[in-house]
Image (cartoon, rainbow, N blue to C red; front, side):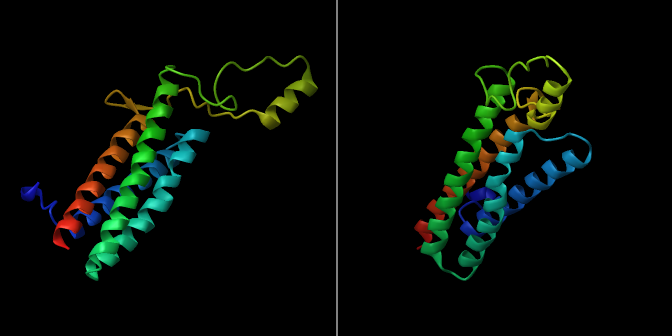
Length: 168
């Protein structure tokens, strides 16, 4: 780890902040390209909406040499992205049909009995299904990649928290 500079918590939080920012920016980019996110995809983004600014604040604390606060912040960032990894892995399992997802965006849709029933279904039915993959990259869906990236961010944050405590 020393060769990668991961013994410096400031470097670690900088890497976490940059990778998290690139990840959420990439998700927005795929959406701009026409890959509409499902309900679970949108929920996965919340970890980044919290994690990116939190990481920036933790970085500010570490650069101000508030090492204990930085270590606690890194631990919090690590826990946040560990939760993100678990949620993303669960969503990937829904996509692989390993388990059922939420009723609102997975499973069989019932056929409308008449026109008024059809119009009611249009108002309540989500058009982007959570159990269908919009795109796979190297065999993984975007939810699968989010699980991998979030797990990596969590591990990096844990390494950084440990390094901050050793420095203190």
